[in-house]
Length: 220
Image 1 (cartoon, rainbow, N blue to C red):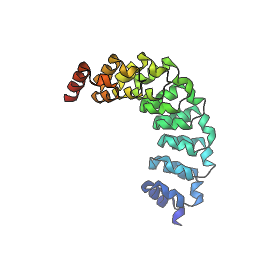
Image 2 (spheres, rainbow, N blue to C red):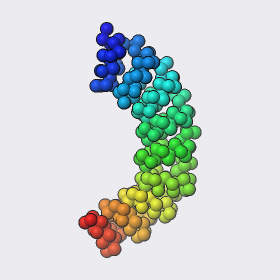
Image 3 (cartoon, rainbow, N blue to C red):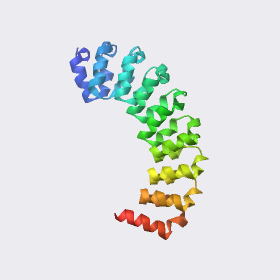
Image 4 (cartoon, rainbow, N blue to C red):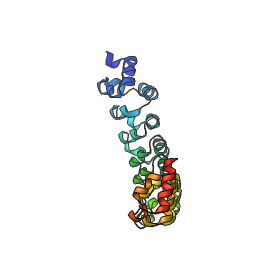
């Protein structure tokens, strides 16, 4: 009886979403109950175990990804092509981009939304965007760590790398080794984050001017 009791099950889900595993199937099929649970539990992980028909229900799917973007991986695959659903998922958790349809991985608005949260999420974008210099400039200005997944040619591009290290000095780690020997770039990186000196070419790690800047920032 308790497994069918909505009040009891909702309390259980609030404490531990894995309690869905022990819930009666009638509740797993109950849209009103699942919607209510999603809104109150603030975590959509239990959707993996709801009824398959509800995984095809757009209203349920929208609420699930709004609560936890990564829940998109457990829902009907057709929603991977739904731009609104994917954007909602990515806004909640950037790595939901991994489960988007290939065409949506080419969508600049969606990819930019992911990179705003975490530059490393560029990993899941279409390769064409990683080679697009104008778009990559926007990305690295937003989050320097996006440099980690841009094309190898753009990792050699001084303009791109300068913008990346200005936003996040530690993104120097992802620059081409040639640019790690570029004093201007290393200075900009160190101005942003003194610890980024460790990613510079060894010769520049001993450069007096760079060391002076790094020391001043560190002391401050």
